[in-house]
Image (tube, rainbow over all chains, first blue to last red; front, side, top):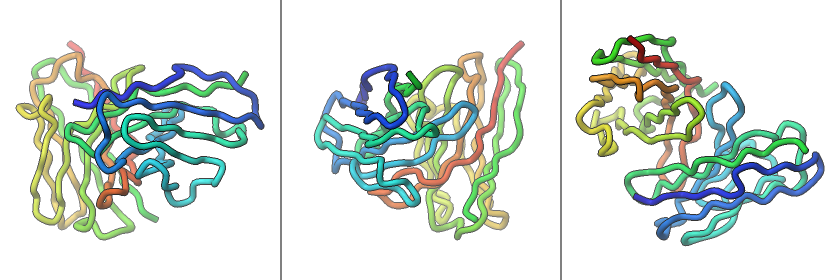
Length: 108
Length: 119
């Protein structure tokens, strides 16, 4: 099973700043099948990025994904108030599919 | 619009079973696999399994292999997830999600169904 480790656990930033979130896999993720989700309290996850770097439909271009192999990054170029949430990475290249434990992005 | 609507919250006793429904609308139900994911309180997401609504074929995560059954009724565009032999560790929010063919990921999610297991 591929274990996904996200860092940092919590990231405190201000609106307008740049956020960089990391997701490291215990082994290489096949075909870069790595996704990022945003989740707010009491809500279902929302797909942001799939295939490591492709934005999902309707996702603003301030969100970008990069990486391959075992190291992946989600970048939010300029934080908006609605971006403060939990972000989770997900690998779906190798069964069993697994999720990271999440990074909480909070307002500083 | 494309949406998945799940059944309401459930409270079950240890040892019982629960069946959660997931009704699809706004798209061709048979065209997309439906997957199930759960989230225990304060915890991360955990993958459970999936069904191909077209063929009825299923695949489950090994952890749940002996306890989970996913079915579908194409006449009403609804998928079901039944989990048996419940324990307190199964207390969680259960989500269904639509999953187009990779490289796409789970793009539309149900609102979640809270299942509480308590004596």
